Image (cartoon, rainbow, N blue to C red; front, side, top):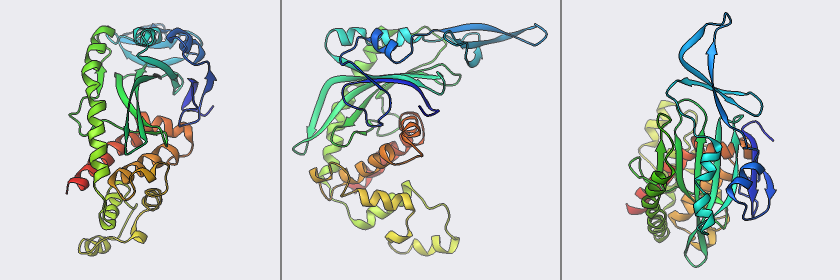
Length: 320
């Protein structure tokens, strides 16, 4: 498997990124952890110089299975063990509220994730179904917080959507590593955050009700995927007139093609819902060198941030 995704298992249908090893449906959290080769612990070990001197206020995070050094952190940094992360899902799965879907490790164990399918969904525009998932990200690296967030996935094209409309939106819970992981507290907070999933339906419907103008789409795409460079004279001259398709960057041109051709476009042709989903389809299925890099970027990197911006901008244009 490629270098970003180290190990991975999935149950049910093949996930949108096409990675991982298929396992039986409805696995318990412990069984999924073992299937994803995450049945190891993070050991906290002291750090010494080559002369044997102890380095104060620092410790190494070491993977028990192969002694891989995951990172160097301060002495107050508390790891959340993989077993704790999976145990978080136990009550949900036992009562039928969720099903384990995918799990794995990225970057040689530095990031462990668990994705569970929530038994909640909604349908848009006569058949455009959106399912709810819960993503638990457990980083074993300095500067990264435990993150639990709801992640909608559009079934027709397996696009991973986004709930956040701005930086103040709380569809996620973040916990630092200076205190013990409290699963009960997170469950309470996530119950409040789940309201966002249904608010998202209203957002999608608003995008589906407003048709786009071609000139607006060119501006939108140029903002999301600007050309690498344009002479200053061109930039000044372009301000006085609408952009043309041939002046856009190659990613913009490709997304423009996808607006009325990507899976699910027939549900709301001509709408800003299609424009936004063209961006999400491009980031999830085409952007990047391979599926491995796309997975990392969509959940944790540039593509995640790009989709947040894409949704916010699409809403602005649809309300204009």
